[in-house]
Image (cartoon, rainbow, N blue to C red; front, side, top):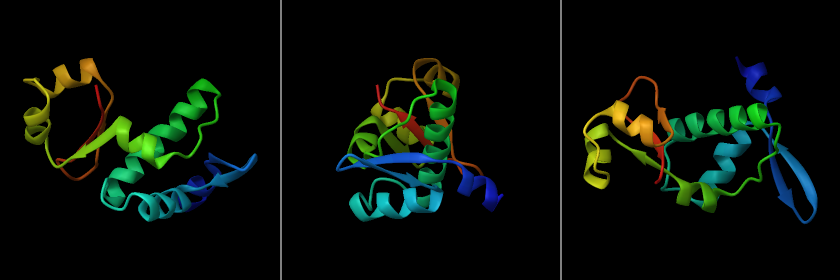
Amino acid sequence: MGNKTLSRKLTNIKDNMKQTMNEFDFKNEFKKIRPENFSYDGLTVLYDYLIQYEENTDQELEFDPIAYCCEYTEFDSFKDVQINYDVKTLKELEDKTTVLKIPNSEKLVIQNY
């Protein structure tokens, strides 16, 4: 699985140069800039989602942790989501926005709406 992770790429545009980032780089650079916004598991599902988005749209994304923090939020549980959003079920939430489930936990990363 480590080899698969290293072959996936996310682009960081800096001073007109592109830097390719693997999952490890993505998490470490993100934590340097915004250490409190996402857990490492939350960053894993966000990274996987962004990589899939790049592959599906054939569009390179710029590494922008501030924008990702504005666009996505990690919640400890669906009940925590309900405090912030008027939704009754997980299905209702999934119908309204992108929901990324963090494996082996109740945590979710959602696209804010």
